[in-house]
Image (cartoon, rainbow, N blue to C red):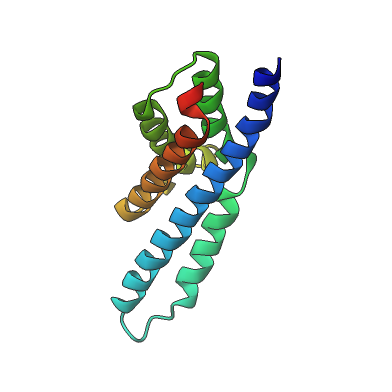
Amino acid sequence: MFRALGRVIMLPIAFLLATVATLFVIISLGHERIVQAMTGMRSDEPPIGAAFDLFGLAVQLVSVQTLLPALLLVIIGEVARIRGVFYYVVGGGAALAIVPLLTRISQPAGILELSPVVWQVLATAGFAGGFVYWVLAGRNA
């Protein structure tokens, strides 16, 4: 009884902490990539356009659609009692890498042309979030 109650309390906390770790990786790696991109820009191009593009992408990322793949990953892992680190790390990377596809589901396919760097940052953040969740809750499923 108490083990199940502890599990019900621990799962949302672990998911929240994994989300915080994922956001930290997105912000830190994204900031590094933005600085690299801006230093390579010509001096006559204003960086304000890039900032507006990033703000638009951030607004799209903060939606319910972005949580669904991660929640499905956690629910399947908990129901099936999967304890493997490989499942949570690779699943976290895949869940976050498909987020741009989900945010642009109503738009034509030609619009989804993101830089490979964006895919790398999202996948790396998903790997980190999956690992944090596994450390906190997944290994004891």
